[in-house]
Image (cartoon, rainbow, N blue to C red; front, side):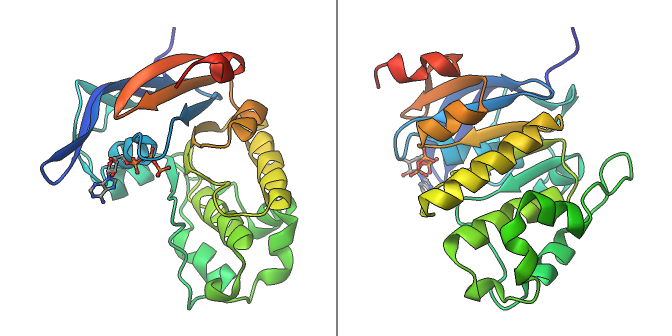
Length: 229
Ligand code: ATP
């Protein structure tokens, strides 16, 4: 069997002196969509940040496609094919949508650029008319789509998504879900931190539930609603 695309074993993370993650272990296989669920403050965002090297972390093993990434900077990890969509989106509000995307464009590990603007607009039709719109003048839902589009133009193999449904209208959540399903169908691997279990059920095969910084439960997504938290 080939190695999982993302392999996390015994991951601890800290904010200053305060430990926020305790020995988290999980895997994401190639082409798989996996949900990270759990209450507010459980440690979902921290898990994604820890993979990206955005918080102090230590792991028995943290590997991408079989290669150790535990000592790499965020920038290097991104270059290896991990796209990260932070919870707060981090859109440049003074730049246009197209400029926000242009700044993030990088070829993939194989040198290919699979995401010309036309393909992004086919995935997110709402963005097509907003090329010249300043980031700060976009709605929350439009910004969320832009944040995903910006991660895609880095040509990732793995997408880490932090609560893409948070603070956006239900119609946008539907469009986002459809887009994510389409991405998964192309073979992209996804690790989704999300409180919206319905969205996870639409997209994910398996789930891990984090309780107070520790792994509380893992299993098939279809069984996640039945677990007590
Ligand atoms: P949410 O849905 O609220 O983002 P979460 O499951 O993603 O929840 P985290 O944001 O990962 O949770 O938070 C995990 C723990 O780390 C919480 O106890 C939180 O208070 C703490 N924490 C998060 N960010 C910081 C920070 N910048 N400094 C200090 N502590 C933090």
